[in-house]
Length: 296
Image (cartoon, rainbow, N blue to C red; front, side, top):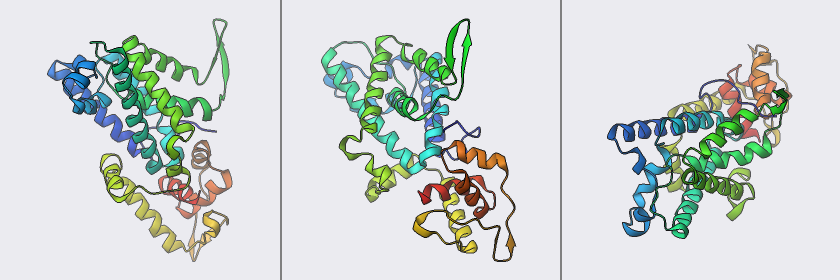
C-alpha cells in the first residue's frame, strides 16, 4: 500500500530540488520572453548541433497550464522517493531523463519537422506513471454523474491534461517518458540492479548525483541515524529490525504515535518494523524512515 504520506518535502530532497530547479528555470524563461523556444527542435539538434539546449528543455515549462499540472504531478510522485529512498530515486530520475531525452531526439530525427517539442520534465513525470499504474493500488471507488472513478483518477486526469497541453508536441515527450519508465521497470541494461542490489555509482557519478539532488539535510539525517544506533547499541541481525525494545540502556523509549506508524506503513513498510524503527529513532519519523530503508 502506498499513499502520498505527510505533506511537504519531508523525506523527499530529490523532489524538492527538482521542483525548485524547474520553477527557477520556468520563471527565468518567462521573464526572458522566449519560453516557447526552450523545447528541442530538429534545427537545434541536427542543424545547429546545439545539444546544450537539452539541459533547460528538460526542466523548464513554457506555459502556466503546463507549470501547474507539472508541479502537481512532480509533488505527488514524491511518494516513490519516500518508498525507495533518495539515493535509489536519483537513479530512477537520471535514467528516465537521459532515456526520454534520447527518445525525443530520435523522434525529431524521424519527423524532421521545424516545430519545437514542449519543454519541461515530461520524461520524468510520465516515466513515473509506470510505477504509479503498477505499484499504487486503488483504495477507493466512487461514482459521479453515473461515471466510475477511483482515488487515482485525479492523477490520471492531470497527466492527460499535461500530455495534451501542446498537442502532439507535448504528446511526443510524454510518450518518450512512458517508454523510459517502462525500460526502467523491465530492468533494461540492468539499471534496477543499482536499486535492488544496493550497487553504488562510481565515485565521479555519485558526486554529480549528490551535488544535483541530495541536500545537506539528507547527510545530517544519516549522521543522526548513525549516532542513534551507536548510542542505542541495538543489534541488527541480517540487517533487519527484529526486536521490540521498550528501553535502551537506562533511557526510556516512548511508545511511537499511531500516526507515525501509519505514515511509515503507507510508505510500504511493515507495521511491526515501523514501530521498532520509531522506538530506536526516538520517534523521529525522518530517522526511522532511513533506518527502515537501510534495513531492506
